[in-house]
Length: 355
Figure 1 (tube, rainbow, N blue to C red):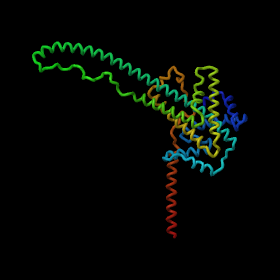
Figure 2: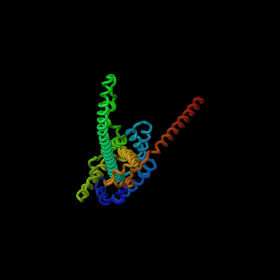
Figure 3: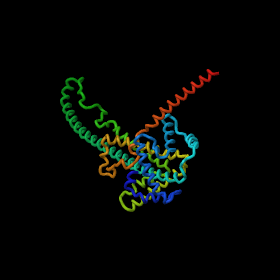
Figure 4: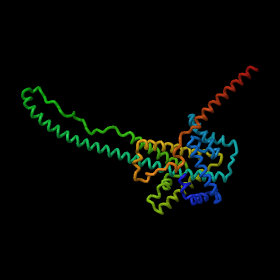
């Protein structure tokens, strides 16, 4: 997202967004300002472990806190409960505000999906190349074992012939004596393979799970992974025609997400919050995989590819950490609940005495 804000074709994209339902060309500057403001706030919130929508939209931040507290307490978030809570007060947002906010959030989501997709593709590439590297190494070891086995066979055959010649006299003198075996037991295989590389298996499984979750996220936001792939890789190979196709796919993704977000009014924003929560969780998982790849020096496998340059600062959801606030809030809520229970118990006891 930050790469787009700094270097992207802001004017054309924003102009295309203002043609969405409920928006006009006069909303362009407000959408651009909101996108920059929201992106900066989201990065700060992620860095500090706060809810994503803190200092952005209060209702979404409340929904996010409520959902995270529900999950940490072992209960799934309840849409009915959130609707009941949100319907207690009137929203301070007008229809124009919600349209512009949905446009800014759709732009952010589309750009973050593109970056996360590239990250997932890079992890998949490293996983495949590392598997091929290990298979080639295993094949080399196997061929080396074949060479050693051939030498052992020739040597053992020579020793066997010598032993047979020497043992003829011994066997004729004493038929009870038998020549001892000097070769390995039948069935032994020098080329028996060792256990598979656990790191290869771990990376392959993690890569597959990441791609599955990413595909589900695209569906969750109202778009498809086909369009997201189009806006990510359509410009390969580099040409003006492919660049036009890429920009068209990008506009379609932003439009899909906007139309999906715009289905929910200011009081019923749970699906919008859940989309960003899932984006955050998948991004954290991807960052952990990248950390493992860096620790094991596997980024070397991107040399010579389009992934050789990786700029995590270009996106918002790259270095997020686990939530810190919900655990503190949960502890505070438990303490307040216990204090309220004690106060009620004291009040009941005083009423009993009075009676």
